[in-house]
Image (tube, rainbow, N blue to C red):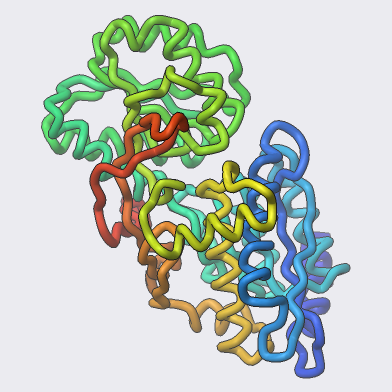
Length: 390
């Protein structure tokens, strides 16, 4: 049954990218409804901005985006949607993917159909190891965590605790923090793994409080869970007790800052994008955001992941003359560098993951508005987790 299914997928892919094709379709799988709908919304906005700036054609072919809603992590449904996009919509690319299990689920399909999958968000290092047709324009937890763990150790923190969502990226973050912090002379006194759908964090806060840790490293997927965790940290008195709160920038993504309020003032995170990044490319990106959508308040790392993902897709189309062969398309962008709204980036030819500057940011109120102000930068950071232990 499975062999027949994949055979149908492969057969459908043979017509993809034919010389007479007038439209090249890109299937985007992401949450467009439900609690994580902000991901889908910002993906769409990033795509729209890129096409507003660069048009909807490449070499005479029209690039069309076809969207499919996956409201929460569900690898079986992700695979079913990918199958539909490949067989019925005859897409030349898959893209999007908010959660790691959903991205990994499509590996056999993209291999059989020989089409690329451009990851806009999902952040577990192992994803690109599952197929040579994956390429990623977001980040990994290893990439953002290693500089942060070293920074915390340099602050003189000796004891820390980790609290992460119990799935691929969270485990990557926990592993990266522990390995780096302990190598720098610190001790991780406890590791907490929280169910992905947790919404009551009081028991975890008590465990953090009782641990004797001076600092907590936390990772949860951006959205309602990070908002609830950050609020619970303040409401349960951990800040007053002097426990320092650190994590990757998912915790303080820009759309959540108004709701988080003063509770996150002074919080330090490490991340690859901030609205406050001072560059001509970012100012232009935010200006176009405001022009198209009336405000740039929702501009965040997922917007930029999609924006840069479209840049990669356009380049693949241009370099292959619209004849999309998955392996050749990915090969064509290995080592490619450009100036993103986040700063200078490169597609690593080995990991097919984006190398980029990671910034230490502190939440500050500037002109009455909360922002992630960049305080230090670490240039050309790779995915430190690629093939770890192999």
